[in-house]
Image 1 (cartoon, rainbow, N blue to C red):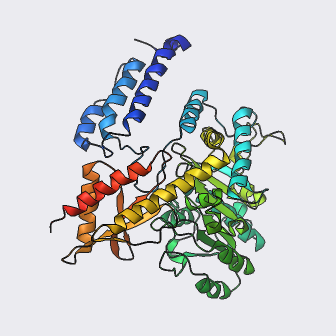
Image 2 (image 1 turned 180 degrees about the vertical axis):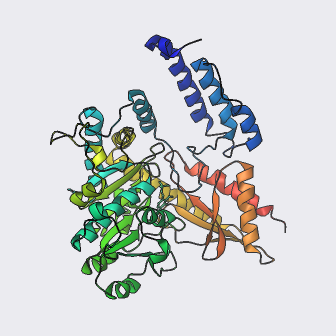
Image 3 (image 1 turned 135 degrees about the horizontal axis):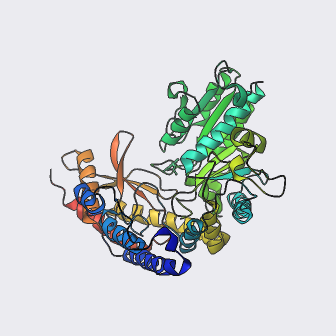
Length: 473
Ligand SMILES: Cc1ncc(COP(=O)(O)O)c(C=O)c1O
């Protein structure tokens, strides 16, 4: 039995070697294993549950059991034929760097105790700003996901628009504060509403703007709302609709918003990555004009979960909203960057490292190629499925998202679409989910994984068409 005291580097080596073997076995199996999990909740509880252990267990046995018993309940999510939600895989360098994050176990809230991990985030932040074409002097933070990136950016926005109106929200809170108008598209992502709720803006107070057929906010409808009265305003735009992938006309939205003094925030969870591809960059024209941006590295950059990114064109507002001081902390005085000044987290893992590794391993050209390739695969899906009988593509496939509807000769298209999604999930060749788009049930295909090939798309199309052909009312 190994007790914690005995965990010397010698005792650790076999444990880590074995864990590496489990990990590479899992990853190598992704190409051919059934994508969906097989185990039921009861089976998993039986395998993983039991009473609270009284005695220590041998670490090698703990990890061996964990790897074996959890496996049937895992989705091949980092695999090449997983097209659900909007989920990337893990680039090899990013995955390995993530292991180092846990190994080094650096609490990267401050520069002074862990200069290397802080400098890595500093370097990586500057790379990202260049890659995405954001203003050179923008501030940034490495957060857990786009949800917290919204929270951080919208906290900075709240600070800035109220400060402009003579109100210090950090000191005085929202009670008696001047009202803030929050304007956003009808088709924004739900995490925007959630971040606003966290910040004290009730969802009933939000001002939704009508959208076009692809879910993009209509700039012609925006001007009238902003012109109603001059008041502190936060305007949320979107680069990448969760269903259609459509990117809003960012230049027009920023221009109209700024005319009335609004802070413009962009939800670019995945769509902002169009900026990293010279071919797709025109889709995000004007993005650099916004005041804040939220995105993910765990989606299209293919960094392991969890990894979100926030950028802000007003570093003073960003720091005022997030920064904190205590006498026992060692705040950097100019020599380095304290991540906790830019993040909602206090203690935190060195979350920037896998992002750094992803960027170094792909380089600018490799990232452009990753984005372009995923979009080409999405078009391949749309072309092939669109030619199949009784299949309709519902969106303009400008990015990596495809919405598919299966027509029922009897007219119950929703039922056939939902049944086809379920049948594809059960078949296991690939995995994708469903949605309701404009009142119609649809299959959602999202291509985000670095390892997906054209052959994977063709195999998945075959599986989808096969599942659709089995439809019986
Ligand atoms: C447009 C958009 N915004 C925000 C999010 C939330 O991202 P996260 O899950 O990383 O918080 C998503 C997730 O799919 C998204 O597609």
